[in-house]
Length: 400
Image 1 (cartoon, rainbow, N blue to C red):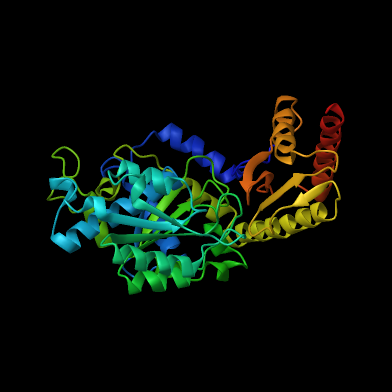
Image 2 (cartoon, rainbow, N blue to C red):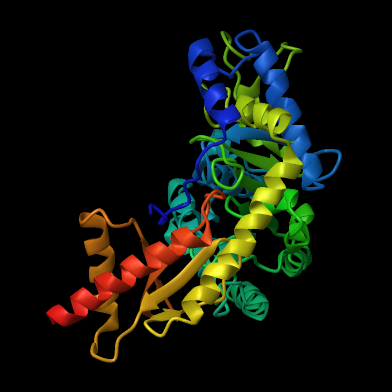
């Protein structure tokens, strides 16, 4: 009944690999510390770049997860625009004089780490322009186009647009192709946050990620729908040359004359775990086909749970599911403040040990959220959980 957040039950190969990683206790920053591990990580990165069809010049690096991956994507976009417009090196000279004019565009439903990254990068949250989203959680492309025109008219400098493949609440996937076309038209860096939905690339639903191959950078979280232990993520680039904005040499570590690859050259971390082993072993033991089938199953089951809620008079489905989240709330004719009822219900369910439910806001309404990630759950499990929710709701209503 712990169904609130994007935490998957890890697959056994990942758990076993975790023990091996701890026992080896390697750091992945230089070839001489982790030669075989560096090779394995590069092979996994190359495989993922191929799956997303990012092209022959693509490359990537493992990260701690979507937050670090998004930060790196936006950092590279920032440094590239400074270099391109003014041959200005932020590495050496700090922020350029026009930094306060730089703007990042994303949807109002994009992950909060877009704003957090802008803050950490010295651009401030004011540099993030959030455009409207449809009720289903996807970005309004016409609003994006209008915002770009307005920013240009104001003399501001949009340099990056972020598309999302799987928003946290709705699981919504933006029209990545349309966003990519606008990004190309306005010469913007195109970053795709596919931390949640990236695993669709292995499933029968991979066509829903159309346009991701046009991205300049892509965030992937393996500790979500790839069923890896936390933490395990990656950022992938269409053009590996852009990693140059991260390069710093140290005499004791990655000397300028080194010919062998040192992963520290393309990472914001120095000490780095061998997390690629988890993905490598999972793909060897379970395989991408079986993993994709697990994702397919979750999507079908999510629709079934939504249909069950839709036909329950004491519950209200608040949005059609897109990936594996279900947004709903309890309703009652005897209660005027349904927001308070649902907020209280979530807290009571948690403190009584009944269930860990998600809570968010959908179109101004307090909502409960199921995040389906365990392919072993059955509809009987959800029937029992919904019965507990209805029983608790009735108790709370009767107390008023």
